[in-house]
Length: 103
Image 1 (tube, rainbow, N blue to C red):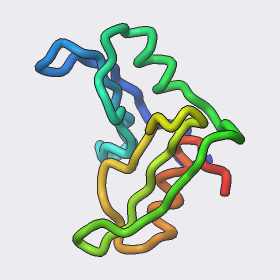
Image 2 (image 1 turned 180 degrees about the vertical axis):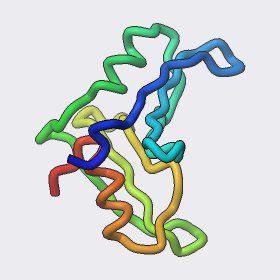
Image 3 (image 1 turned 45 degrees about the horizontal axis):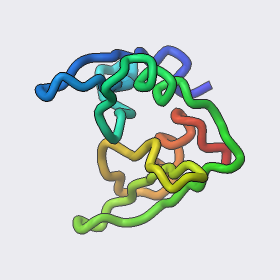
Image 4 (image 1 turned 180 degrees about the horizontal axis):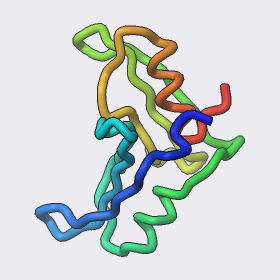
């Protein structure tokens, strides 16, 4: 399974809020929180969010013409997004699958 050896890290940003990032075995960041959290437990809950059938996945092209994704919860809150653009949509989908996208 892609990403099974990825490492997660929770850290505090300059504002003192908690954020997470997911790093592949090659050191590349393949996922990160979209926002800071005042409570570490809220950050960890977002980091560990698994597949959820009510989440909406959107794939789009950015201003550079690269593919990106964003994951939105049923309450409208963005709960995940790609940390970089991809030249192929299939690469963006592969990255999203690390975060729970099932197609």
